[in-house]
Length: 220
View 1 (cartoon, rainbow, N blue to C red):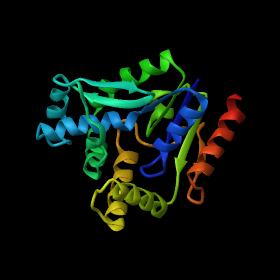
View 2: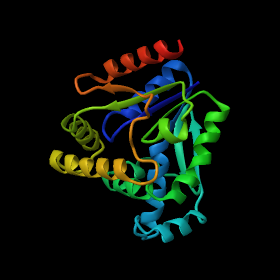
View 3: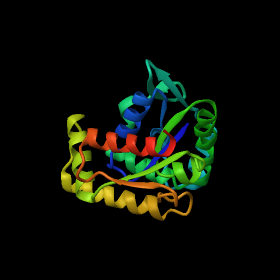
View 4: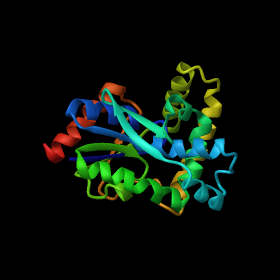
């Protein structure tokens, strides 16, 4: 079973994918965490994330792995569990920049596909249904209004002790949306056969229940 969940930042893709994985007993793959991890490596190396040649050269010096501890996904950067280090607004922007580099996408492509070939999975990201799992049985494009997404992300960051403002979160989110949807390589757009799920007026549980309905309607 392959389930793809795409959509813009702040729509709640990760929470939804984790819940689907837990309730269906399948593996969850957070592809965004992989790009954030490369972004962290780029920052630590003091490389401009838009410098294609430098970022490409760095890929040969790092190892990015997915592992699971007590059922929870962990991302390792050359053996280090990067945890919350990649969950900052700065790493969001780094991830957006490096994800536009073809060599980065190729570097991670095999990691993502190999997991799906071995197990039933739910993956969330921005090009899962179009590039990573074009043969997924269910493709959901999760979205919400800009204001709803920005407010959710702001509360999430605040809970983690990250200082910011709703206005700054909205500004950065709109910028990332533009970057992700207009990039030449694997733009963040809905697959033609994806089912749109707008959760602007739904809470977390309501979103999960609607997604499970979609899955049942398509694959039982």
